[in-house]
Length: 388
Ligand code: USQ
Image (cartoon, rainbow, N blue to C red; front, side, top):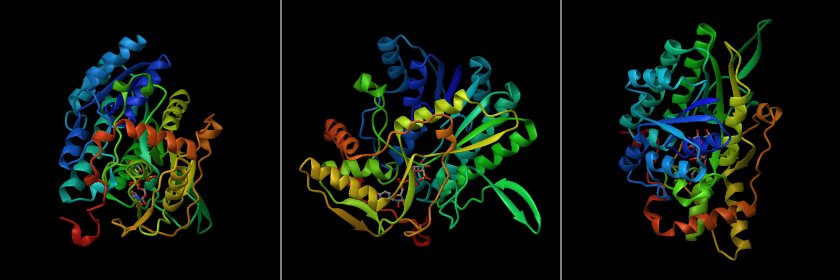
């Protein structure tokens, strides 16, 4: 299949490109490197030294004889560029990762909130119009987030909710209660995409993904120069990835609040498998299809305990630190989210265990000289008082 990946420089975009290219798909990646600019604004860098896309594509081609096409440009500001890319490459599917991915980053200031929503919402709108101009049959596979739902006190369905009200019934998009301006940007995207399925017969799969962990995929391990961008800082690092670096350093794990927050999680390798499943089983014309993309759920404290247990197995002392929660979120809540659609289509999950955690700690040790301990502790609190 001809597949265009938007956000091909990112943590998930680059591994997805290699994975699909190895499977024989005709892959193109598009990026504008803006995430690297946001990282420098936040004064952080990934743990891994990430080559630019030109370089990584050449290395990939030399090692595997598989070609990946590159388009460099901004989809949120340059709709002509996006339009031309789609009309040149003629993709059958577009995987859309090209978004500002961090909740804490979006909560730093008014500027960061607007930058997040500008980039994410306008990028998706430009994509919608470029597809409308070129070929509305293109399947959009959009990276959404489980955070769109928030933590309601009822079961979470996969995207849609059947309701009975005053003796009548209907099916509506599941009510959203997101916890940050970043998560809100994904809610706005979902609403815009559902609208064009209804109005213009688009085909869309919205992947409401949980928190991803992991540093390696079967393709990144072919050569260190193909590694993906891995963060452990307070803005772009996700919780388990952060704990792994903290465990390596032997510093207390930064559990926010009491650690009762429950979240859906998945291994980075499962992200690739899920995207492939969506690609091979496209949404129908006019269908806005939602998959809840996670494989297991944990509380933050359970994750920390798992990391501590893995450390004990390798003779490492690590404490669980309880930090004042910099975020506004429920510490103790109900969480029961359906996630059967991808498994029904054949997903075989990689489950989290102590051996995997130990493997990650060993991988982190390869990059130990690049760790900056000063970017780990949370310094930004997103209550009203700290908003700028
Ligand atoms: N947390 C800690 N300690 C830390 C970091 C986080 O206790 O050092 C807690 C947070 O308070 C939160 C939970 O861990 O309750 C998850 O935080 P996170 O930073 O790992 O994840 P989140 O901000 O929700 O965002 C991440 C990705 C985002 C994706 C989302 C999926 O950055 O792109 O959309 O996970 S989900 O969480 O399901 O919405």
